[in-house]
Amino acid sequence: MEERIAAISAALDFIEQHLREDICVEDMAASCGYSLFHFIRLFNQCVHHTPYDYLIRRRLAGTAGELLHTRRRLIDIALDYRFQNAETFSRVFHRVFGLQPSRVRKQGWLDSRLILQRCDLALMRHYLRFGIPHASRIMQAERWLAGLPMESDISLVKMKEIRERLKLVFPASSGWYWLRTYPVNGIQAEPADFAGVQIADPGDLPAHLFARRLPAGAWAVFTGQRLIENIHFSRAYIYQTWTANTGEKIVSPLEVGFMDDHEDPNSFSLSILLFQ
Image (cartoon, rainbow, N blue to C red; front, side, top):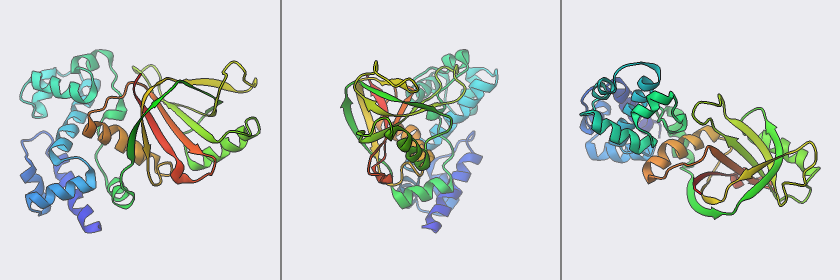
């Protein structure tokens, strides 16, 4: 396993070093000493992108940084990252991020969840050891949660802590939710976290608790091994790989984690809203 990972890591280094140059998949394969066929198959297993798609998305990540942090002309940025012209660049950029480059430049913000980060050794090891989350699409009615704001990101320890606190108020609850709200349009600096249980009537809350609404709609629900214990890897796959491979669009800043009352880490699921 380590030999395969080391070979693909060498190809990833080659890609990073030549993002602004004319390279092809054959060049990537040659950089790690594999045949084209074997390289493509191994790259897909380790990274879960095709080599060409990974190259394009890493170039787009570079253009996103330029758009947000420099005043360079769009055409100069496009050509610098080997897009043929401004029209091609805008089309590809919009397909991935749902916004035109000019709009991103004007508003000074882009959903960072969708910007493909360099695939590193830890992520490849995680994929090969645990596989990727399984996704299913589920229609959900409107739901209400009762709970408390949290000051840090989700973890297995945090889920158990909030379970003990809320069990005193809702002893019959069969599951526990973690709600993360990501920044929208750059107004909110950091994600906001909330933990709670599902309730029927948001108007009948204990004084020390708060209500949060989960909208009705189609949700993508992800399950798999060790999702909560490797939450950053789970998010990397969902936002940067699964959306790319399926063409699904995220329509909400909400991310919902759920664990049943058996405290089995593998019962944890992560959901994102696709459409309302």
